[in-house]
Length: 126
Image (cartoon, rainbow, N blue to C red; front, side, top):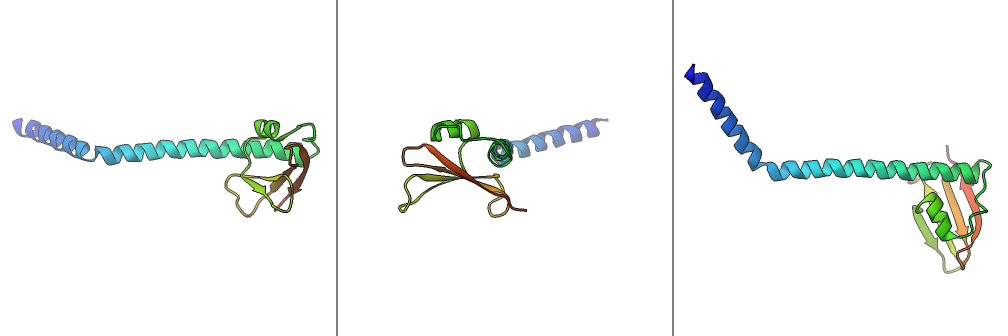
């Protein structure tokens, strides 16, 4: 009877030492998992904002009543890309789904040099 108790005690002692030895690596993996969850939530938020903009700008809605860049960003979130050209005055903002870099629908929003809304162009891809 004493042999199984001793064996159990030895196994518990060794496993806890191994656990402490690799604690730093285990904490890194745990932080990585939390970060991936946060990234997934951010991707979902960006995709939801894109869908709202797509509904408003490309499917019969209206975005012309939004006066400028600040209000546009507050309503639909940050764009994926902001393009400023030397040849043109103003900015062009690109909205797309978070994980669709080349394929998928894109929405270009144009602002003049004063930050006022000019137009929106929808590019639907299959």
